[in-house]
Image 1 (spheres, rainbow, N blue to C red):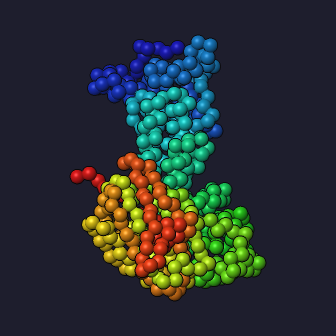
Image 2 (cartoon, rainbow, N blue to C red):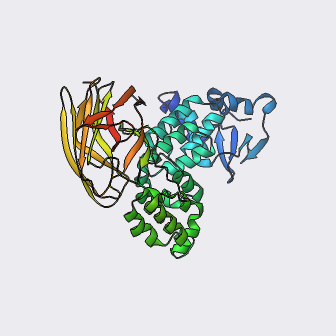
Image 3 (cartoon, rainbow, N blue to C red):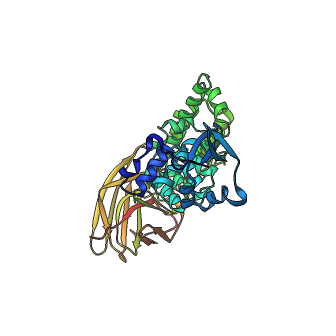
Length: 449
């Protein structure tokens, strides 16, 4: 098929190759004595390769041009090649796939790494599969996560889908600032809004959706009026959980935006006033009992539901007790905020044996759960009882949790950690596990010295 003695201008290049990889890289770049022609993608771009390299790297490719599977012979510029059509990949990703077969170098970007992974799985090159997974894990960011997630879904790559969804849950505010967010399809927006595990308050989510709607109105050359934005949003608008907002947020921003009909606005006000269930979901976000952020920050959520129509405790004092079975660092708390307007809080965390931490903060009334991060972490030792005493004014009334868990076991990257919660008595008042003001414990595993 090929004239193996005709090296032409490339004669003698072998003397400069220090090893087999450099020699193979020269073949990849020069296409000297190539005998396979790949026709790739809708563009039908032609890429040359050497059967000897393919035979060394992929049994699947070997079978595609040997024995009963020998391909059609085509001629280009007087040279003959076996032709192999690749219809399920794009030239950029297939070019990177071929380069890896020659050189063991993974030369990709986030735009087409999933295409390389698809080729690696299709042609059974497991070492390249691993490299692609490692690349995604190391390079996943708010700027590319939506693109990679969409591609992973199309290829049924559940491992990468899960990786992407975790970033979407915890870093949606950053993602919303990217071009990828503004350009994503309505179907993906609806999927995101349907998630219970988004770590974001509903008011911020609403503002992100407004930003998306304005961007799509501009793409369609339409004015971003309330009517046009509602049409662009379609079903996405119904997935925003307006009942989770404060009444002030809803009145100042949502009702004022004119995105909802008068009837929809009225049903939300009825919910705030007398608890009548609206057509919008009242299920709180991040409802799973435990999540671990990519940064190592972990969050335990105590309650299954939120008590929003009256105060849990009219005294303004709440007392809660907990213990853990592994040493960890408590780095913050998620505290239920007030139903209307700002509110000041004071808190003391102490154990019967050692540590004590006091702090004060103020929520602005804009979110259901107000995250407070300590200036310095608090060391929590195993098998000790810690008491959280929470002080605040009776007015305005606060949200609180109900259906509290007595025990939550977390599977962390450093092993299992179990939180236990206990009833406590303060000034003759018994504070049960089932209700409380501390919604979340934010912690990380204590590193060994």
